[in-house]
Length: 228
Image (cartoon, rainbow, N blue to C red; front, side):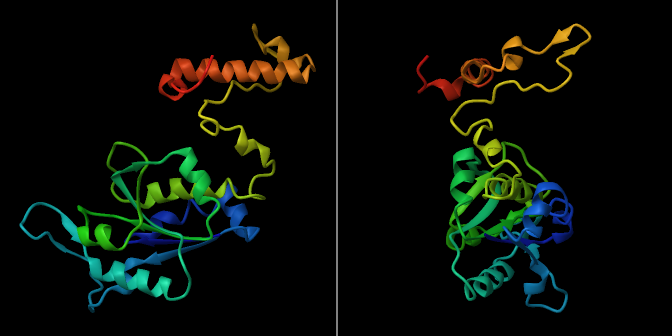
C-alpha cells in the first residue's frame, strides 16, 4: 500500500511514522508513506499557500492551486483508490471504513490548516471526507496520522500476531472483553478463575459474554441489531 499525505506543515507528521508499529510496517515495506509539502507546489516566489477569504472574515484559507497541482502530479504517476480530506465536519471514522481502506492500493490524504481550505477542493478534487471526532484541531496532520494508524495495523504482516486486530473493539460491532496478565493475584485483586482454567471453550464463551456486557454498558447504540 502507498499513502500520500499533503500537508502545509509536514514536520508535524515526522514522529508518528518513525516509531512503533508504523515504523516497522515501513521497514518491512508493507506500506510506503510519502509526505508532500504543500509549499513545494506554490506558484509564487514566496511559496505562500493561503490567502484572505472572499467576503471577509477572520483567518486565512488554503488555496486550490497548490492542492490541485500536487494531486495532478500524483495522479499522473499512478491511480488512486481514494482522495481523502480530514475535516471535523466529515463522516465519522469507523472501524469498518478502516477495514475497507486497508485493502486499497493507493490513497491520498489532504490535511487542512488555518481557517480551512477552498471549498472547490472539497467539491471537485476529493472522494471522501473523514472526521476523527466532533472537535477542532489546529490542522489535519494529527487526524491523518490517526487514520493511517487505523489502516496500516490491519495490513497482513504488520502486527506480530495478525489475529490481534480481529479481536479489537468494533471489529464485530462489539467492544473488546477485559484482558489480564500475570500475576494472577495482586494484593486482593484476582484474575477471573475461568481465564486460568485451561478450558478454551469456556474462556471463549466468557469473552463473548463480557464483550456483549461491556458494549451494552458503555456503547448501547452498538447493540441495537444484536440479539441477546
